[in-house]
Image (cartoon, rainbow, N blue to C red; front, side):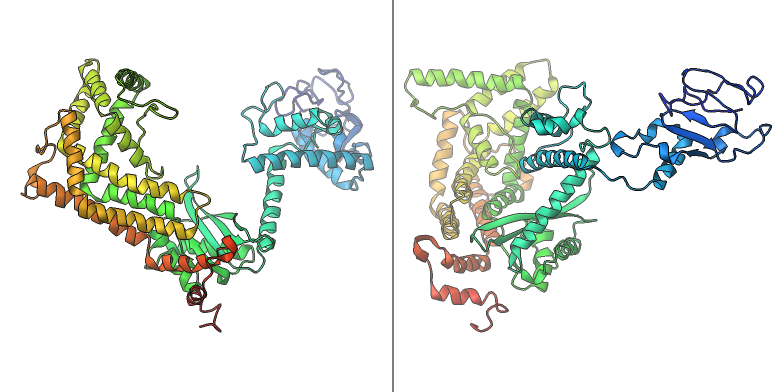
Length: 599
């Protein structure tokens, strides 16, 4: 008769009927003692004792004649309900049973009534659950990961969650007695599934608290989209509102939504769905905040416009510091001269900053020059002076990075030349030698020096504004004044700064042996046939400043500025010294549906 194989990988360490006993070798009424020795095969009309203990299996057709040859796996095994262990903590794992007998075990447990846990069991479960929740809440609050690379007991670091739980045990004897290895194997409350369930509960409770705190008050929405690790677009949504009890302005994350594409209609649908999911009415929106992407802030059929069609008082206000960074990035990309400059700087950084060896060479040469300058008293000494300079690649999302990169390139100009000479003379890499020659040709030109010093000066004005806008204690009115002041500085530079800038460029070229007004680096086919002085003054100097002023006007529009000025009259500092009745009445015109009696 065919039987189960105890050596099968599907049921390790289980006591089952051996497979090497055939019908001809072992009669139905014979007993065989195979390995493991605790298993006995009995006739079909007898009861069979199987492992795990206290379990009796009998065939469903016990009265069948012994001459009938039906494979054992085709017969339905029935477990003795009374002999199965009722306590979930003491039950054997279903995986310990032979595969063909697991359904019978499950049916046997279904026939038993629900297990009534004792008070001690419930109390121990409560302690384990609270310990797991406390550890997960801490990790969630700190934004730390949960799982470890290896979570087996033989590894020293099993991940943040398990290590934090072990630390809690060492300081709490009550938790130590009922947790981890002292807990039942099927009730430790540390599995990834349990962790995810607790995290989801925390998320729901936190979101519920946010919605209850907001109530029926007005709010603004902050949204942004990005792709996750699986390359799916996810839209994140935050609420910005005033806490009624404290009067503080808070920003709270409300949820994520998957979007099939980043069109304005898809984003609007995702935002409305998230709000409705939490019983928040879109009619309560009184402000919008997005990044500078065209599908978000565009005037025609874009997200900002679609939201305002539903709620006309939901005005779009962009972060001032972010708008300024977008303005500088636009200048670096839209103007051909600026684009050529930053392309040259990028090629320079690819050659000089490609390895630690070359960066270390810059440090050594700069240290030698600094020591020589200090010996002849050319430099002042003191705290914070003469710091080491580096070359970082400018990034569109790294604020002030364009300014810092240009400033360091001009400060390290002679050092960079020496490093390029060393790289060019090194015959080991012919590819780098070609790149170095092209960079030399560009940097030794009046054109490069003119553009680099011009952008350093312009970015210097905007950098002061950028630092001021990022201050946490900066008020709205002062921020708008700083924007207006920067625009005035740029206009003054446009009218009166040409001669000052030209003299600065000529002085720099003379100090570094660079010829002035030489036709370097550009083909005459792509420029007008004018004098070099006219080209640099009209086509470069004035055109770049005009483009920057235009970007300022486009991004810092007067409608939003006027709205912010009116709101500033509610500033509580100095006993509401900024309060103005006319500003309040003007502010009411922006929200006609809320102040119909005043309009």
